[in-house]
Image 1 (cartoon, rainbow, N blue to C red):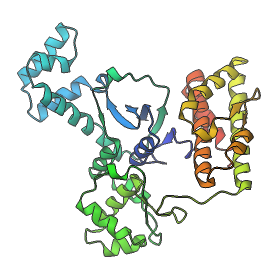
Image 2 (image 1 turned 135 degrees about the vertical axis):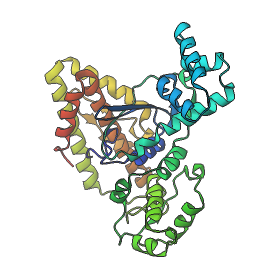
Image 3 (image 1 turned 120 degrees about the vertical axis):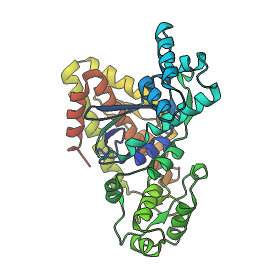
Image 4 (image 1 turned 45 degrees about the vertical axis):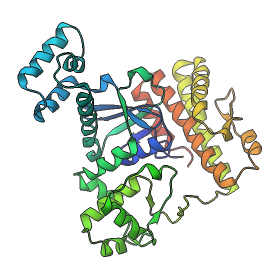
Length: 367
């Protein structure tokens, strides 16, 4: 359980933006993703894995510039709306509607286009810290509309200009590519060139064979392979079969993972105790309670003891009758979920610097 697996916090150099979005969609996350590099900080709200456009995410000045550049409104009309919004203490979007600058259907259409285009540059960022805050309040009445995350990934990768990111993620030439069948694949709309490359991969060819046989050229072929990998439709891992099952872990390996997990939890408990004293147990207990709705049914018997460790054996015994491959996948995901929740508790209680120190130290513990 290294930092890559505790994926709620990390860097885009470890997980490209497209892949990160797919992870959020797969786990149907609700919360706020923060991406920060240099002076740029972007917040993206999610509900059940799809991106939400909320009023605060629509930058007034950038949206006005967007409308002007596309010649959807005139400069004089923009100034009129700006003054109206200021005078009536309302939003720029509300002023556009009240001043009949755009019909409401067209206005909503352009807000949607603006929101999407505002996200495209993130696909080309090679290095930036990200953090997903699952304890983020998002009320239904705040949401303008949702953007299907899978569609955004497809279009975002198609728009990518930073080919270095794509090259880094390319499978080695001798790696065999495998098609996967995730449960959301019916929601993905591939264009004709993407279907063509997918058909080439269907016979489990090596990466070098795909490049040789493709009639689209190396650059376009690689971009499409990157897209298919980012969407979770293709893998180059020999351990991942077409039906998307993974090999079982041995009992010894499971035991080792459990030990590493509790070593990390004990370290977090001691770290936060040193800073805030006896209240630390209550902080971790609350974060565990908050994490429970995100855990699988397999983990309903997990409990936190007064040493800051988790009692796991009862959950393992209770679920011994379940198909082992399914149980293992979800149980290990739950352990990472709990770790991510505890890291978030440190961030909220002690601040960003303590959270960064904690994560670096956790990398040295266990496996």
